[in-house]
Length: 287
Figure 1 (cartoon, rainbow, N blue to C red):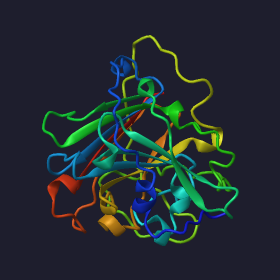
Figure 2: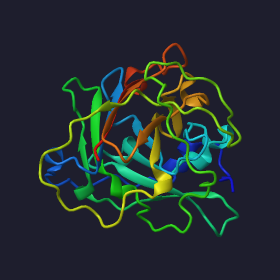
Figure 3: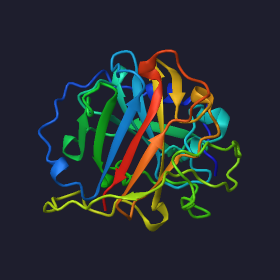
């Protein structure tokens, strides 16, 4: 069953659930000493990050839908069913902690998509606003188990038939995105950066939430980055920027320790403000 929604823009849907700003200061977190079971995301812009005027969004499809890419104009691009979770940093969401949103099909509304805030849990997240010392990169570390249906939705993955696609081993981070279907769930080769093994953490493991982070059908997660101002998406990782429907989202295998570099497609639509212009980043998964 395809997810449907009575809105024309993902940005509007996301910002309808915006909180009134974070007042919580995260406690010291030892995640950097023990990354087992965590995902490390580095989010880069061309200019210095502006957490006041812009919201930086990390969109994740944990259901491996096909095609799996969450596109910026989700309703018109037909990729709404690829939205599982999103982390929002900056703008109206504040910067003390990222705001996590879960997307799911409302069984009482004829299959429409609904989004809701996930309660903050500082013990599962760590946010470094100036990770590289140059002002254009932030780092988010989160426990994979945090995205294990935290709101206990009855139907978090409505399109798990057929099973999720696997990333193509021949894809590379520098390859140009290729156009594919935008309104149906027909197969297409997913984009994935070349995987580079990451050294496994040596620190003693610490407690994580009970239950596996994913089911066997949710082995591959797909990512896209957005920059948003108010209710308008300004950029995404694809060459089409705010209206892109070609980018094959970065595919991460949750069951292996790997490194996935990300490069923004160049030569296309770009916002004029460097703080809103995506440069790329990096995703690391620690088994």
